[in-house]
Image (cartoon, rainbow, N blue to C red; front, top):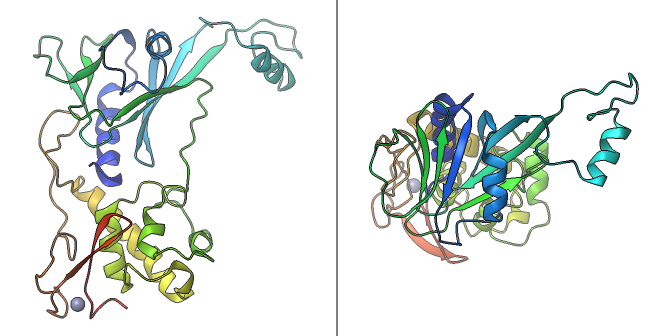
Length: 301
Ligand SMILES: [Zn+2]
């Protein structure tokens, strides 16, 4: 499953390749699962839109879309909002009609096995392709997902907001507040997407190891000082992985369709029974909330 660093790497790769391109037409497959918004809405919103930016929010890839002129008239509520803000086709202050720009977002969650591929139209369409966007540059952007846990959706007002805070942007005080009074194990709290966006299993285990905290410790019992170490560790681990281009263990490929990911050297994740790299104690594995957790019983307390 692609985690935050992989999604960041993919979003950066896509941003380089498709920013500024215009979606000319869209084909969607017959399978319903990948479509979180109605097919007609996805097609209607993407077609003739310019991709203004591609970025990561949590584990989502967000395509910011722009379209000149309003293909679809604004709703009553939108008109009221626009009038209040002095925006929209009719400018209350100047009395001038001005061209509007329709903004929306296409949001892609890769799920377990989802991939976005930028390719030439003659490239063979892979099995499990669920969406093909034909771009004005002549290339195609395809969404492929064998296991169909990935999701495609639209946010009309360009107001998509993933739950939780960005682990790379949160400040120390806010980070500490996230865990105050929580009786769940710290590992579960780190994986809770409503608290921190996009910290997955591997990076949670690696961060806890670096901070010297056992995954089963109740979040509320961890001292401010230890949370400070965890704060630094989470950012370090994610940033190192992003620098390496992600470290997914799945058979995962980047936006160019190349298998190009180096593996972050895991210090505990997946190393059950192997000696700790610091103290040589055997790494333990426990299951917390259904997820494997790896830790050193000597270094982590
Ligand atoms: Zn150790």
